[in-house]
Image (cartoon, rainbow, N blue to C red):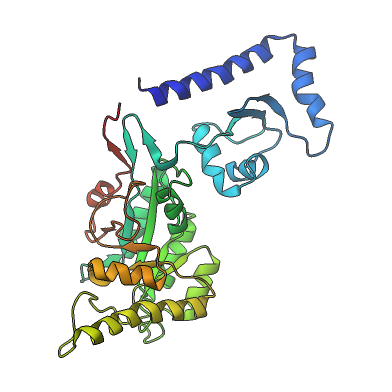
Length: 346
């Protein structure tokens, strides 16, 4: 058994030992002191045990992991911390729930390897598809259902940025969902399916496309999805290959055009959605050192390529990897869900 698992087992056994001690005392005296007396004060917390690392409570009503995280950890978004500490336990009246007070290892680094976060990239959705960049609605829903059933948690790019900066931990089976370009199907098809499973996504749009046809998103639709927890990043103005000069273009003209693609698209999104856009997806996944410098100059902090693979905490945030979900079979999809890289570090 590795050291991390041994420590978790030791901590859990200590909690169980305390509970065993409590239940070994005379029934009327000990348990009424631990539970019933606590209930006399409205809003009191039915505390069973507390250390620097854990709180153990006995549920007095049904409650969610998110609700417990808000009460005890002062952060509803840390519901996953409570959920992962109580796998297989129902959050129902009478259940004993362990609430970790210390965050798991930042960066997902352990003695047997390190965590890696896949970014799953989609483009257009439709009932029937011919293009490789199109995913059929039934398959997309099946893939989202698979994520839910297998315990994966969809996190935001903001969460991933904090993970990369070694500021926070993420759930062990974290993924980011991303849709590129700004197709109308993002709102009509992907949005309701993602909401059904409690997921959000990062949308990368090229601004010339928004509102340009019946096949594209509108700014009102983007605002609605943003209000629903979705993120919006830039995919340039025109979806051109940023690494290539146009015919007859000299160096100065080329740099000025690329700077406009980066800066102007950010300005438009910032104004339309009242935000500070800090993520950019490279059209066609193409970039070079000069493009990266211009991205930083424009104010972007995350850059997304289309190189396959996940993202450990030590990834360069300006060249994140993404898995384009192109094949319409579940086996290929599941193969992209690698969230841990084994590497003995002892």
